[in-house]
Length: 320
Image 1 (spheres, rainbow, N blue to C red):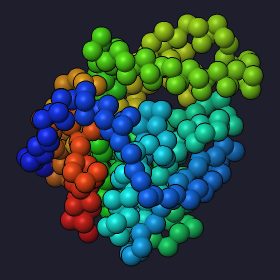
Image 2: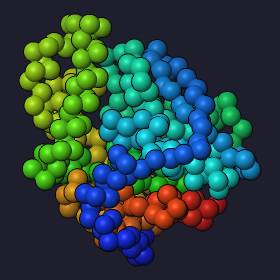
Image 3: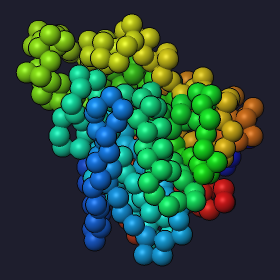
Image 4: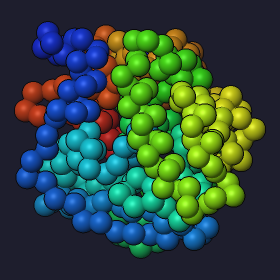
């Protein structure tokens, strides 16, 4: 499916990509909303925490929400999406990736952009233990990359999975990393690094033979983090090997269910390789929308409902 047009036209302030990004990431508030936590055990003896919210008019439909780098199930872009889906008849299952639910996970490994085995575990848990006829995925940034990679890896996809939406998807991880390391994105990259290191320090007393304070002191950039921790903990040769193997771009041609990627043209985290025009043009199941505005996981909308929240609900309703 060729690139599809976008009618997203936010107020003046939100046409600035950085303002849009920061507003939705730090200033947006979601009120009158509750979640119920469920913990599931994984085959490797680790765990995932799922934050549930429910529609008052249940229709046996559930959307699985996947957060971005150093996010969690209570970030406004997750709770805002969950609330909007609940109002439209969908239950919402917000996944907290390993180590992201307020408690360090049990293993040295944690989460990364390509950890589709954990997404698969969540889907199988829902199929085995919940009574849903239809399952949908909505991933943000890192979570969007994970969702698209999951679809195209060649595994058997459940017939209950009806549609997927990715918001601000870094389809080429190395391209995105190079942009994040530029001066224009220093506040973001430094914030990510700070939070990642705080979590890594929690693993020091638990895994003294696998990570040291000297290792942590050598992490000056996000690439250093992936060279020293991500690759070592998850079986990659180095950061570049991780980016190459886990970027969803290479898996997009194999997607066989309706899937939508919304990547703003003014997303400062993305290089040109993060916009899969060619792949969308050659796959009738893949839709690509590239609004001029929106920033990174921004897409401000009136009534505290973002454009991407409305767009995802409409896309899933059409996928039915």
